[in-house]
Image 1: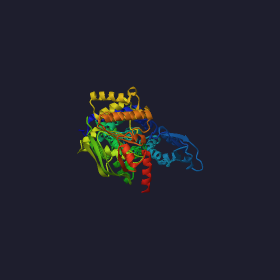
Image 2: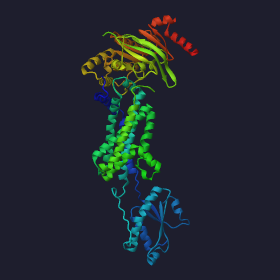
Image 3: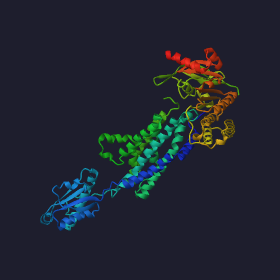
Length: 374
Length: 246
């Protein structure tokens, strides 16, 4: 008499849900505002590229060569050079926080250079900010080459083994190219988990779930009907991020848009199933929000490779990240945007996502009961 | 239509966590009558009602549904049942009209039947002029009437109402009862719970429940005579003292 799944009934639930969404500024604002806010924040405010590093130069040689050396730093674009006279304690140069790095040029710098063909200058770097320190260290080798060329007027002598480095896929190591596509993971995880958990928990909390369950509607129809509108909202959020990445930040997209759509749907499904599971277990909005933040933000921000590279985590955490869909979606996204990864390369992470979908959806629908037993 | 659906509750015990919510309850809900489950707050009325609509399963014992005196499976009776929970379970942001449309879709009522039924229900409840008002902005009485309309939309043969008149003013309560009597005339089995003792006397049959136990059943006047009390209030106070001693 009552089919297991009748599209008409699921549709009526979906229609009702759309009404709720359109009349609730919070949901709508979160779904559309969050991606915009995150893109602007991570795109503009959080710039991992280091430039305009304050460099204090203590030039005790005061020769042409020493000035040229400082100019090489200045003209690299990464440093802001200021001259100071050396105080009694050289390490104090960095204590005052006035500079991130200091260049010491000892007397006889020029004389040694011309007499012996080689000369030494020292750079002190503030190691208390280790991400900046690492970047400065990276710049130095390039500056050393440029300085050698400028000061001696000739190319550095050929060495038996020469290693040249070229960065593929993101030639300038632009951090926006790296973070903005990954934002999808954070935004979709938060939206998918939190909005789903909230909407189902609300029905339990107000008692309308009891009323729904007393009608011929089946749990599957309730789930499909309630989640479909949020799936659409998730896709809209993804579209916003995609357009912002391409138009505002000029991030290339080399892969297939079809795979982007498929993997987005798969990640959204996994997130929403987690949200459903949370709401079925908590049945209260406040608790649902708290659990959603745990399940949504923590893995997607910290354990997905979004900011902190998984390769440099302790081994335990490297394995831990594998149980979160966020990590796998991140691999797919970066592959699609920057490397133009094809199916053979994406098949692995996509298969994991699919398996997670099956697992979470099965678990959530199993736990979704057609009664009000505690 | 002649009354036919009845329910038999047989030795139902229900544990909710460590507590015993219902203890060996047996009672009979005869077809075509207006039954009241009465008792003080927390006595187990709602728990019993939820067993009748299948939202809770007994820990022991069973609920038997009868069609013309013959036992039939729950799945056969279920589509003929309507239920109205005690909590304010409607959607505050949806209007009366949107609620009716929503439940039409859930019950998949044909458009023609729906139109006639909707007109009839709006007339009985006199909610017609408020069709576009959101449920969150209805008065207590109107809200309960809307809940009842949603339940009655599918023309059920069995209606279960959990404290339908709590928090409703006296005039609306009277109207509500007139509505219930009209339904009973159609041969529908009605089960309501109430904590108002004056309402207990308006039922055809009362089933007295206190602290999870079924204490008495019968016509209201009969029960009071048998227990030698003048009101149900008196009866509850006495039961409470007796049960507290045990």
